[in-house]
Length: 315
Ligand SMILES: C[S@@+](CC[C@H](N)C(=O)[O-])C[C@H]1O[C@@H](n2cnc3c(N)ncnc32)[C@H](O)[C@@H]1O
Figure (spheres, rainbow, N blue to C red):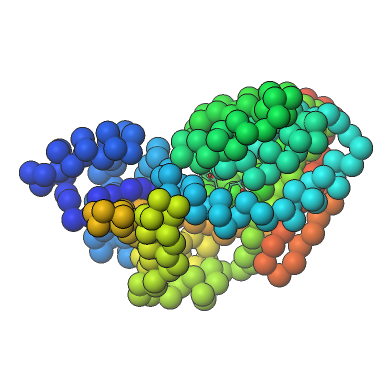
C-alpha cells in the first residue's frame, strides 16, 4: 500500500516540509517515488511499480475504532476455531494480522497462549487497551508485536496459526500470499495446524471489480466527533491475472472543522480456491477440513509431522 499526500510532488517546494510533517504525525518513514507515478496515466497501462508503504491504511486511531465497531462482535470464525480445537490445549497460537484482537482475546480466555502480529500500531494500541481490562491471568497469556509479516521473520514453535479475517486480501500479489503460507509452515511445530479463512474468486477478475469511476463509500463518526468519509476508484486491473489496483480516499474531518484527505493506492489479488490449495500442499499441509461456498473458503490444514523445513520451498 502506498500513501500519498494529495497534490504534492517531490519537486514541489512544500514537499519536504509536508513530508517531515506527515512523518512526525503518522510515523511515516518512507515515500516511494513510485507513488507519484501512480497518480499518472501509467497506472492505467499497468506500468507503475507498486511499492509497499511500511505504514498501512489501518494505522490511524479513527480507522481502528471504526474497524472495531463494525467487526468486534463478529464471532462466527471464533466459534468455528473453538470447535476445531475441540479438547486440545492449552495451545500456543500465532495470529498474524491480528488487528484489534477480535479473535485472539476470546481464545486467550479459553486458556490458550496467544501471540499477535500486526503492522498497524493503531490497531495494536486498540487491542492493548482491551487486553488491559482483562483479568490478569488472561492478560499474561497474550503477547503482541508490531511486524510487517511480508518482510519480517515470524516467531516459531506454534501449535496453531490463524490467518483469519480475509487477511490474504491484505497482500498485493500471489507471490506475497504464497510467501505468507510458507512463513506459516515455518512458524508451526511439525504436525501443527493452520486455520485460513478468505474470500475467493475463480477465473478472471470479477466484472464488479472492473467498474471505472469514483465510488462513494461509507462514512462514520468516531467517539470524539471526528468524521471519516471513505471513497475509492479502480485505477488499473489485469483481469486474467486477477490483479486490481484502486485509489482509496479517506477524508478526516475533526470536530474543530480542520480536515485532511489521505490517499492510498491499494493492490489486491483475490485468491482462487485452487491457488490456496496448491500453496498449502506445496508447503507441507494436508487439508483436513474445508468449507467452500460461492464467495468464501475456509480451511483447517495440518502441517506434516516431518520438520517444516523439509517441505518449504522458497516462497
Ligand atoms: C481486516 S484486518 C483483520 C484483523 C483481524 N485478523 C480480524 O479478523 O479481526 C487486517 C489487519 O491486517 C493488518 N495488516 C495488513 N498488512 C499487514 C502486513 N503486511 N503485516 C502485518 N499486518 C498487516 C492490518 O493492519 C489490519 O489490522
